[in-house]
Amino acid sequence: MKASEGKIGRVFVVRLEDGDIVPACIEKFAAEKSIKCGHVILIGGIGGGEVVAGPRKTDEMPPDPLLLPVDGAHEVVGLGIIAPDRDGKPVLHIHAALGRAGKTLTGCLRPGVSTWLVGEAIIYEITGTSARRLPDKDSGFDLLEV
View 1 (tube, helix red, strand yellow):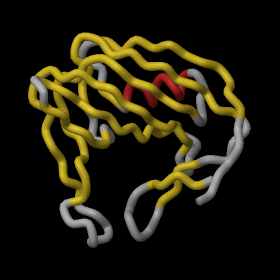
View 2 (tube, one colour; view 1 turned 120 degrees about the horizontal axis):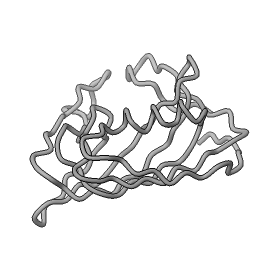
View 3 (cartoon, helix red, strand yellow; view 1 turned 30 degrees about the vertical axis):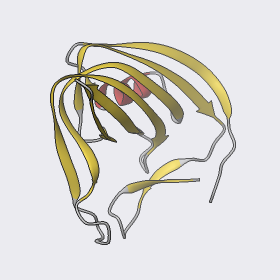
View 4 (cartoon, one colour; view 1 turned 90 degrees about the vertical axis):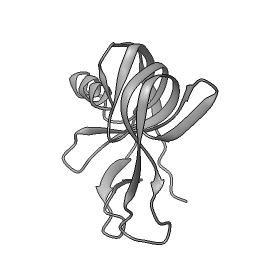
């Protein structure tokens, strides 16, 4: 395990509008507010898009993502971390559980999902940390480095 200490800076309450794309709209907001690193809590509705629900094969690198469609409006609760990439751009890695009619779809929202009606997010800015997202040659992902 590796860690980097920081402090809570600003706290934002954000309302996502119908059709906003997560994570793109949160990353845009973070860039506009100069949030380099942060924690995101998301609740509300998701109407469409895809989530990564794991790799197709656990033992293959780089992994081939298993993408599942979001068909229709789902309730959502998600948690994520914003960290700058090698160019300093804030990147959100967010996982969420989406529910509809007693069934749950859980995964990474990186490919993009659209807000249905409304999404609500709390963003806690973290200052003074060295956390960054840097390329990992084995996985092909930009992984959190501290």
